[in-house]
Image (cartoon, rainbow, N blue to C red; front, side, top):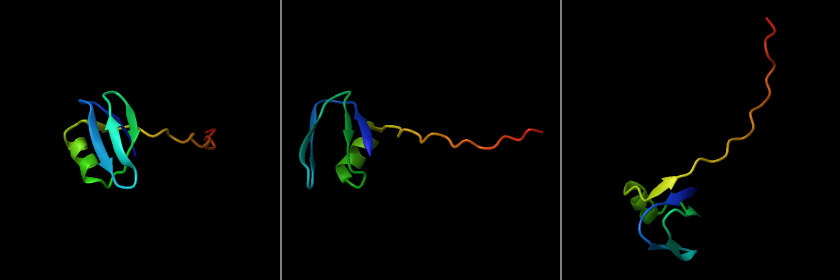
Length: 64
């Protein structure tokens, strides 16, 4: 999931990825099933970014 980090410069160890340095105002792709990621979300240092919406389907309009 994509997140924006707001907080002091911090390091986050992710299994399989190694150490990630989090910098204030930067966006990161992080796993949602990680305890440290969930902790930073609860502390409001990580905010989930909206994913781009798929273009809306064109629907037939009722002429009546």
